[in-house]
Amino acid sequence: MDYMIRAMDKKKTFRLFMVRSTDTVEEARRHHNTTPTASAALGRTLTAGLMMGFMMKNEKDRLTININGGGPIGTIMVVSDNSGHVKGYVGNPNVDLDLKENGKLNVGGAVGTQGKLTVMMDIGLREPYVGSTDLATGEIGDDIALYYYLSEQQNTAVALGVLVDTDYSIKSAGGFIVQTLPFIEEEDLLKLEKALSNLKSVSEYFDNEKDVEEIAREIFSEFEIEVFDKIPVSFKCDCSEERMEEALISLGKEELKKIIEEDQKIETVCHFCSKKYLFEGDKLKNILKYIETP
Image (tube, rainbow, N blue to C red; front, side, top):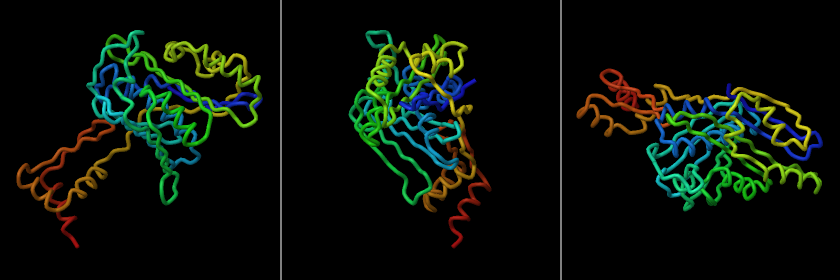
């Protein structure tokens, strides 16, 4: 089962978010039929989105990650909340690159570095908060760590991993975000840096039946980890016929009339979950009537 924890070192030297996201990323892969490289890029971003969303305070808060580095994968878009729900898609789910020399998937090559990572937080204010940084590596984790450092002046380490099986399904996925707190002592900072430098491949930690808490204590074995929150996580899309109707209304009267005259129907597809909605006959006419009504 996929779930996420919020924890802290007992001495309050750092806070930690960690998630197992294997089933969540697998569901996204099934929705979008992604290649291994696209699965890894989307999976890493979904995993980060879950933890970043968990950092927000209120149920109605929404966090959006938009990554476009000019690479062949196009845009990666992920939306999450603070309750463990996430959805996302990539512009080109069919992107396929050769493996890197170390045998790993070339996520950085697919994403590219000629662009930006943008984070938008809608926390109920008149305008959402938007922060943006140039992409450094396109590997997602490094870029999100850089975003926290430049946009929020927060020392952050981000580790994300997706392991794709031979049948293209997701064998394991997960990751963590660790942020130092203001009064961390030099000795603890060095211990933390050592723990991070000794990391195995991130997806390896989640390719087993271990509890997330157990993995956290294994990685940060020099510290006493206290877990405060634990919530289930999942891929969840909130698209609906009503939302698709709103999208059709936004096309305007002339465009909709043209569609009705030429095709008598229109099929809309949700970017996030690939669900299709068919509008024809009276459904389309009623939408047109709604637009024409003063």
